[in-house]
Image 1: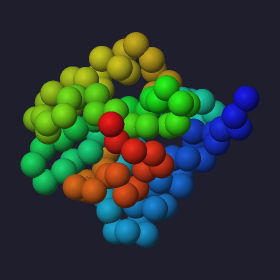
Image 2 (image 1 turned 90 degrees about the vertical axis):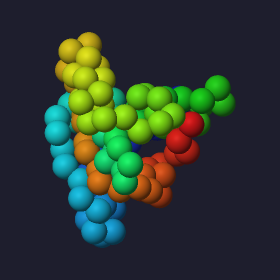
Image 3 (image 1 turned 60 degrees about the vertical axis):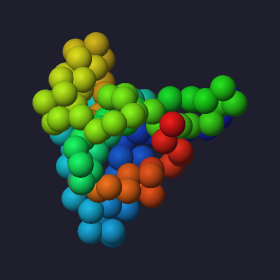
Image 4 (image 1 turned 30 degrees about the vertical axis):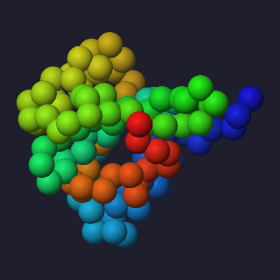
Length: 110
């Protein structure tokens, strides 16, 4: 079994990375500090997209564009997040204002 970092610690590390890079980040919803899933609402230059954690076939952590390959309006991103929070209230939701989210997260975006 793979040792995993607690979600709360991972969130603090991401916030610190964003602070050091002068990238605005906000916690929109707190989830379970030990094992809560994470949704990242990314505010890029041309719209929004939501990233969700997943595991690739080889077990590697990846991030999927849950709202599709193209940016969406903020209302669509918020609607997706709302549906996920109703299903699982332990999900963390963070909003990041950057066009280069892949440089901040641990794993490729697929």
